[in-house]
Length: 118
Image (cartoon, one colour):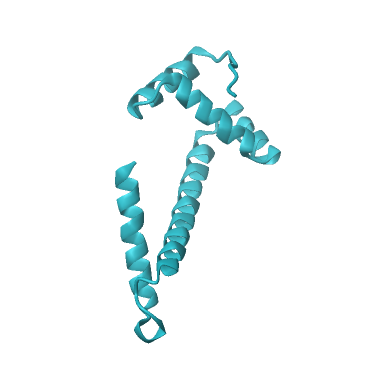
């Protein structure tokens, strides 16, 4: 069951939201729904720190943190793709075991293919 919620934001935030939604071919409502879902799933300390950075308009730290988060996302995606690939046993049994490089290359290819589909 879905519920409707509303929020008041300043004009600058509203403009950024509309631009982001447009660039991602999403409705503003869908973007807000996704943002709320992600935000409430974060630990309180993370939510508080992100709000603090925003209130301080600390763009340098926000950008640095964003880069670090994207690096962590890439590592987790690679690990997941590697594990998924290993679970498929695509390289045969132990006698035909692929090298770690083979697995990483295939995992990277799968990750890139998945990213292109999005």
